[in-house]
Length: 201
Length: 342
Image (cartoon, rainbow over the protein chains, first blue to last red):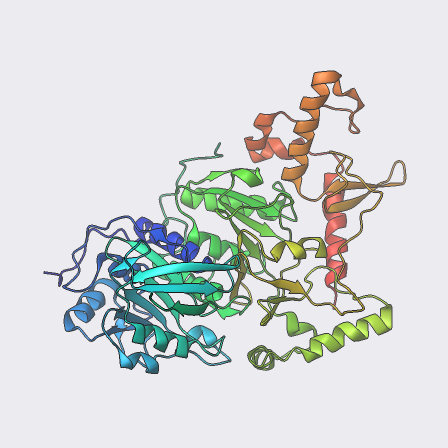
């Protein structure tokens, strides 16, 4: 299961569709877009939506790291994208299970002032994006948002959110988040957004 | 509504570029959107159109376009001029997408040096072709230095340049390419759009993507983002003044206009730079005129094109332009280039 070469993913048209949703979501932080269900079979713990994002953006020119480190994820993504695994501090893409507390997040590359675009992209799996019953309520402010916007996320470990806030303290340095659940709901939080976590009441 | 719909060239990948190239552009575009106004370097490989002729914008369009998109390409506001026609033909040949001249009907608009007059929506994307992405090139020749200046947000030399302009000439002499600060952080060159268009970047509904093919840079102004032209408290930014002038084709007084010289009468004439908007206004006015009287009083002495002309083949359409349009194009070029002179 999940270690095979995916032949069902259309590199040309499916990745274009995913990309346009991704671009829309990145340009409008907090906006939830929904990816069309993909008929792929990723390994245990890796959601099809995050795998779809990886298929869309990763190739042999890029590096990635998985957190927590799953051998099967690495093998599956290497095989299907040609991307290479790298240390967490160097990888351009970090595939994350956001429900697990991950102290390693603090070493993620956030670029430098000459090349802030070298800051990593985080692809984060959570239990739910939007909807009720979520345990994280965030308020976002910044470019792409008229005024401010509220966002609810289910299952995101609060420690990870704090680490991202720490990483993004010094704009333009920072990391950009793509957050998705296993129903295909996707939301992006670029480093330009100021995140305020509301206390759960 | 499509010109050449479903005509695909079979010898190339969809949208000409191979998937690796598209993916690289896509990754860089996301970073450009995440860091508004920052110039992201990208590979910018060779294309069938020479660098400096819109390859930056073209590559962005190729990387984002899908079979369901409706494409509009404009050059200085005009759908029918040569750069727009070439780029549209290449994109249609390699993607088979539908095209339009109507700003409202388009999902992607690639443009050279204008932003359409009509307000764009959030489901649309404007792709701008950029000759010189670096606003600090006015004051610093070294790329390594300007990159450092952006990193440190050191724009003092640009301010001094503007100040010296005012002292010397009583006016900031930058016409098109007016330097603007995005998200209160990065200074951008908004491409050679006239000052008229610069305020449209601020707090817009639409995503603006900028591509410089020769200089290998991509940057973006996301929607609902501050984009402020540089100005002094006592010397405010102002746009071109068209007071007392109106378009000879549609009568508009509130658009950006090109100046033409009528050699037979010696008069200066003005015509809307945005041809799609001008045509729409002419249609509306003819509908109204037909309701009350014959449209014989039209300044050009002929009936404006019918609604179908909006999607007519390009060759047909360019004939329906006023005869002076060639001169207009040439004049416009001179005016714009003059403004750009450093």
